[in-house]
Every structure is written in structure tokens, then in C-alpha cells.
Image (cartoon, rainbow, N blue to C red; front, side, top):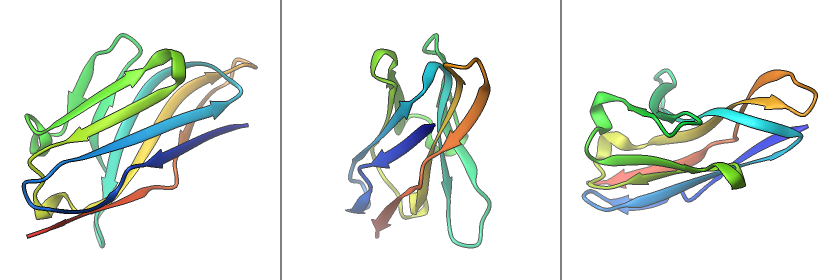
Length: 120
């Protein structure tokens, strides 16, 4: 069993900052990619940022220069530092872990999501 849990969402004014955390636990051998996605009401779930096991990162154009993804490989955790937040960043943010289990199965797991609301 593998679980992914996000935390750190909340309500913030435009221009403010939030830091999201994601922790994966359970029968994990190795995590390849950890990513953050977001879904606004009535819209599809979109990639925000992803980081691989080598520390290479990729960002959506809309967040480049404002958001930073990082991870602690030893602790199976990932973080999303969000600065200069805008009302259009309002969404439910989901963490995704692409990993190998201890039984050598490659799987993906999603967290339950955390709400981020940016007021104007």
C-alpha cells in the first residue's frame, strides 16, 4: 500500500505566498517523479510542476518564476513554494508520485488534494 498526502493549502491575498507539502509513504522502493497538478472548478487537471529523481524540474509557463518545486528524496517528500500568487492560481492542488514499489511494480498515486484560494 502506498499513500500520498498533501498539506499546506489555504486562503491568501494576491501577491502572497504559500508552501505546499507532499509526503508519500508505504511500500516504496524508489520514487521517480513527483509532481504538482491543479484543477480549478469546471476545468481539467493541469500540470503545475514536476521534479525527477535527479532533481530536474519542469514548470507550466503560467507559474515559471513564481513557483519552485523541490523534494527530499530520503524522506519521500516534495514541496511547492508558491510566491506572487494570483487569483487565477486558485484551484485544488494535487500531488502525484510515480514510483516503484518494494514488489517492483511501477505505479502512480495521487493525493486527496489541498485547496488554494487567492483573493484579489
